[in-house]
Image 1 (tube, rainbow, N blue to C red):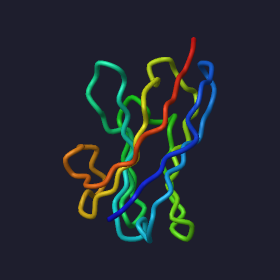
Image 2 (spheres, rainbow, N blue to C red; image 1 turned 90 degrees about the vertical axis):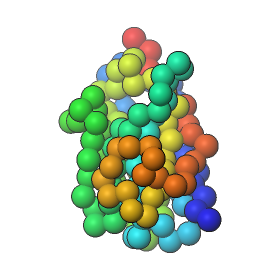
Image 3 (cartoon, rainbow, N blue to C red; image 1 turned 180 degrees about the vertical axis):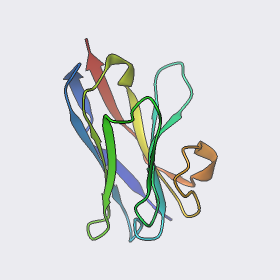
Length: 123
């Protein structure tokens, strides 16, 4: 059973930056595909960024050029660097793991989820 714990959320003004981290309970990142998702109040959870076991990445159009997903296999930590943040980026952010997800941004391709970390961007 893979356990994921997110951290790094907080409140920031528009234009600012945050880096989210996701720690795994076991050697996950070398063999699992990983994704970051977010869910704003009243909206569905959406895929933000994904990285497969080989390091290939995929991003939602809304965050391309602003967010960067990366991982440190030796530390079992997944990152999401978020720059030029906008109020519409405000949401609960979740990391997820799926053995066969590739670089998919679809929720159903991921099997394990963290509890989430809140990101709030003020204008």
